[in-house]
Length: 378
Image (cartoon, rainbow, N blue to C red; front, side, top):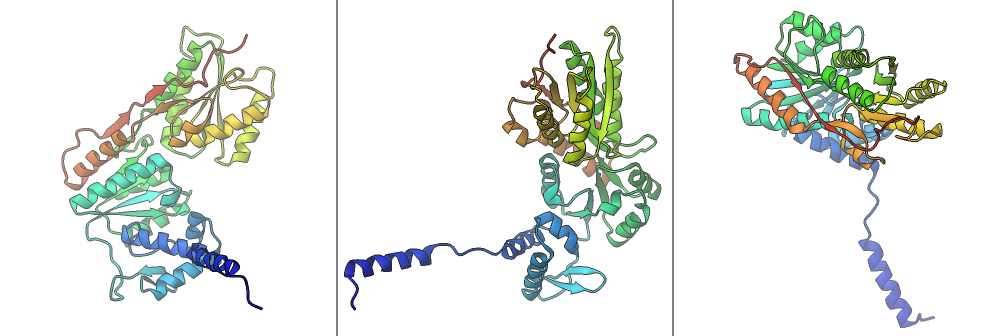
């Protein structure tokens, strides 16, 4: 039976439209493309991160990562070496070797998981170093930041002969190891007591002293500082500055405490509920991390309390995603280019063996009034 012409014509158009529709892209293909971009940009040196790191970075399963790695191996980008990992290859199948002049960065998390502000200065340094003829090579592994990091750091430095190292969020053990080894090193963050290495950070002591002063000026007399127990020197300085302001005359009858918490949301929720459950709950809070600010604020509202009507809250740092929070967060904003330029200035002096004019750089961010700070209800 012959079909009506209009049906055939319509069906033909639908068939053509169907062929024009984009085909579904496999997740493994997206991972392949991301890895290719990372290889071409010099994100890794001679080895790719391990499968577990890649799974966490791209938030995919092991089978997806393995399919992507196999595809890259088939395309001649890498080869698997037993007991070593995935070796990068140059065109022609030769093993990749990083530039003879390079700077290594030790990160607490893989690059895609960095806070936006940290990613900005990493990218800035990559571009600057490229102009100077250096490669920037990133290294991230949880063991570098553990209690027994000396062995892993020794193996890392022996394998990768960088002209200088940059440590982000480093522990005391890491700083002591690099200082003892005499290897040129720049700290992205504050130095622990007794450590004489160049560093760039916010003036966290002064910042938190100012934040506590702002809460006191609004009439708050019960304060709390939420900060993650990371073991970084800047955290200790921040807590000290906060308590200094709370105990400074002429303000009297002030109760201030520092609440340490794990970075996980559940622990933050528990600490907030415990802190605000009592009759003498704090009315003014300072939170050290913008992401944790969101978790604390959410916990407060889930308890039926209003921000800032019942509880005023300040974020010690700023990230772009805070701009989408309502009410507008009271926070401290540092222009990222200022941090990047300070890092580049000290790094240039280290690489060119110039005298250090500024060894310890502490930057002062701008206070943003926002709408989460007001006087407590009487």
